[in-house]
Length: 211
Image (cartoon, rainbow, N blue to C red):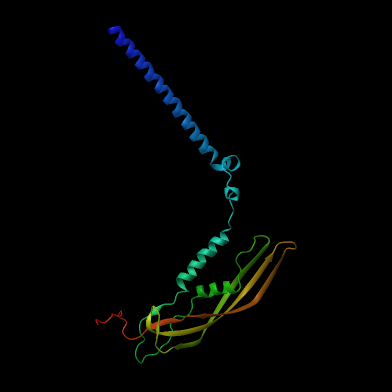
C-alpha cells in the first residue's frame, strides 16, 4: 500500500514538473514575440522593416518661421483684434478716444502690408532699420445709441488713426549675383481703427416681468 502511494506521488510530481516546463516555454515564446514586435514597430528600423507608415514615418522639417507666425497671430488676436465694451460716457463730457495705437500694433500692421520676415539666409533677406512713426487722429466720433445683439443698448465709438512710418529698407541678395539694395527713404502709411462700445442706460441684466 505504501509503495503504491509513493509511486502515485512520483507520477504527480513528474506531471507537475512537465506542466511547469511547458508553461515556462510558452512564457519565453510570448515574451520573445512581444520583444520582436516592439523592435520591428519602433524607430528607424520600423520604417524600413516594420509597419509601413508611408510619408508619416519620416520626420518632416518645419521652419521656425511658421511657429512664429502662429504665435504672432495669437498675439494680435489677444491684444488688438477684440472690440472692448466700456462703461457709459460721462454726461456732458467730451467723447474723445484716449488710446492711440501702440508702436507694436503699428509694426504688426506694417509687417502685414509690407513683410520682411520669411527670407532665406544667404540667398534673399530683407531688413528694416531706423524706423520713425508719426501718429495722426483723423476721425473721432460716436454713433447714437442703438441695440446690439448679445450686448444690449450701446454706442459705437469710432476712432481712426493715420500712421506714417519712415524707415530704411535693405534687401540682401546672395544668388546668382550677390548684391545689396538700400532704400533710405522708404515710406508706408497704415490706417488703424480703435472702435469700441460704450454701454448706454441701465447696464443691469434684463429680467422678464411676471405675467
